[in-house]
Length: 485
Image (cartoon, rainbow, N blue to C red):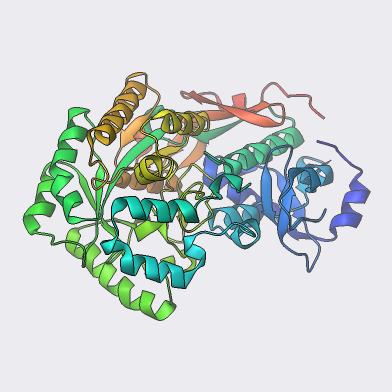
């Protein structure tokens, strides 16, 4: 970071717009740390355009920045916001609004710029309609060639970063490091991300698309149970297949979750607002009928601006990196996040269909690479494995190899394997927790606090590392001034 003169900062950035309290919220919401440990302020000029800029060497941001932005996504030409960062008294002044940047990424508001020249099936409504009209008549091999053609440029998309994008995690760590340097402290206490101090979390979900997929669900539950893993099944309520009550009851009785998948899987849920409102009313009714708390849209099509119409507790429709999906984009995070009152559980690994049919691989090496990258950030590992595509011995062996690797990670204490509903419950409880000073010791208060663990973010040059800890003296967060400039 280049620290520049305070007067230069004020001339470049203009009058301060946001108080410290607003600036701190984006970090305190994520870390659940005491607000007094976050010390950031921002100044922004009026009428600035949104675009790309850097925050350090490797972190791409999208939004407004007082040092300027670029419409073109090339790291070499992007302004670096750290060049406009200054330490003033006990806080760090930054030339952008971090809440705006995070929202632009989580809600995929950057996609119009980032997808210039990179098209997919989702960009052409007529082609999309024709495809889904003919899809039931197409043999699998023809569908595969059609999809491969429309995704042929996937490996040329520069952002989000394949195969896992952790932009938001790096962004948070960088902001926290700036705040710690400004206050001359080397650690900040916070509430750990997962219950019982679990290093990371994993969920397995099954989207049921066809009659053959529905009929294989019992076998798939047998496979999951043989590894001691309980998953969720996303059911298409209309048009695709009959849904006997005994089918749903059988899933529940075995301890698996049921969620709603779209309405009829025709790819038109978000085509127009009027049609969406008609469909969402039916979808919400099915949620009540199924006793479902979660939702996933067909083909991962999404319009996050319309989520306020859903009556679900959580959604699972936003990919972390959507290079291999018809609708390009990605939320650039490996953690759950709230869209209004709905908790988003992003899909952070490649779908089985993309692995088997687009990449034409039956190896779990890509999944293992993605898991490793996610665990490095202590995030959520989430999978979609369709009963419809576990249709060969090779694919079933691949799935068993995945489950075997997951339980190996669990046996090593590296991951909490659970169901989406449990993640939703925990994340909502954690949002209500707080760290308070009780006679010089940190204490976690709030619903579910008996499962929560105290942790520390420890300054590590321009970023932070994490340490899960037990109760520690309050003053330990301030001891050992870093002495960094």
